[in-house]
Image: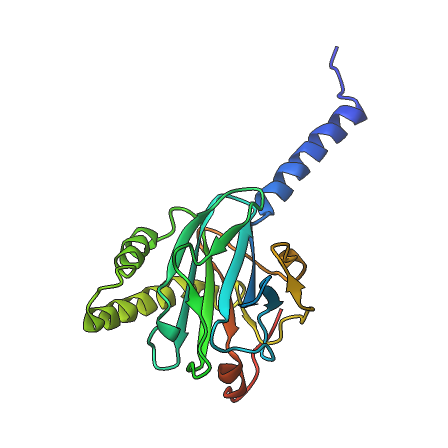
Length: 230
């Protein structure tokens, strides 16, 4: 006698298949927040924005996390292609389950100057195994040497910009967000800066890195037309 599956068994199989499809469609997600830390006792911190003050003693701090183990790059380029403020690029691994990391990694400090040239700060989330990742790691590691010859540093920066442009080309349409008007928060004193409240997020995958671009106040004011924001 032929046995007909019960409607509950069929439903269970269907729901399991649907769950698998939804899981497969979910992309890893990265989040970041850029802040400005001003000196004082205690230090106070504000969200990086076109209206945020920059000057001697003020520092850039980057918070980042991701849903899966991955990599993140932070680099700020001036409009002429050189490194902004002499800040050396950063690359680090992100743990899974949105465990936060901070950049730049000590003892490095990204200190602002009152006469700093306009810049765009790129935060790039990368899946492990993405093309050019190993070359990026080696290049960024070599750029950390504080005694590197200035001419060599210029060449390394040019190569880094080329690699960043190459790997982010696939993210131009869907996975690239230009942050032109970050949400402005209050002034926070002490270590408990609620960065996730102001974080910007982007999806990424092995085929498409996730790119967030933050522009300095001067860079933002010099743009001919605004880009789409998140």
